[in-house]
Image (cartoon, rainbow, N blue to C red):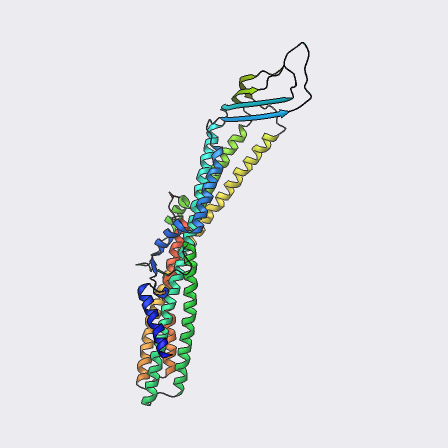
Length: 435
């Protein structure tokens, strides 16, 4: 049995040396900015946004004010009866038993009031589709940034848990050494075992959190959920600006939702102009060419050309209702834009405040970390010379670990706040974007 087990182990090692085992597969290391770029290119959400953009552009295409003619071809065949003839008038029947017709019709608008307003509305509709696409990409980018920060937290938590296991082992060895030397008590051994069990539980929780954070980020990037991935922490921490005023000014020209309202208002005003011009006359050209069964009243070949002036003088109040509806749509968007401008100021100020709070929290955590580190050193030295207890070391170690985690959490909170600050300004995704 022992020989067989050794053979299996050797075989597994040989296989792993030939082709990398899953556990040995190198993890993809990305910065947060790189992860965002990958998501914007290949994530399912970004792909869905591109299809939505293409659909919106196709929906706006018929509103493009160009002199596009319409050409219609029609072929028909009719079986009817009985045949009707008028004796002495014509050799051809008035109503034949079979009648066939092939017709080609051509329609070309020549003049219609409101061409400028129609063009303005079409351009606004195209720009609205682009800004909707940009807003969706910004939402994706923010989600990816948050997922990256979550993975950074999970990576740090896993590292801290592994260090906790190592400390628990060192702590247990120190306790045994002190008991042997007569400086420790047997009850310290139970305390060391409890410390080891807590460290193992912490490691299990950290591994689970890391696994879930990794799966979530891979999902947002459009990668296999179990694919190895790591996020590289930023080389330097962001620094909040002295005040949010400049960021507010930027947001007023960059925020996709605010630009959307501006474009929707532009399209609504153009629609109102068109509604006011709807009663103006229009001029069109119509041509028709037909090949058909000859009858006493219908020739075999037929052609016609018509210029038509259309002017609806009375419309039962329909145009007035359209104008009223368009006016209300404009006023509604004006009110929404006013509220959105206030909301932009609030969003940017709140995001800036979060950066300030994270920066202050980081400064406090760094002071607490230095203090807890010194306390842990004192507790360890005191226990080594018989002047302290194992419980003092355990408590000092817990304080030190908590201070480490507080510092890391403050760092990651500052990073996350910086991306939220950029999102609030509308600069997370550039103005000009490619599909």
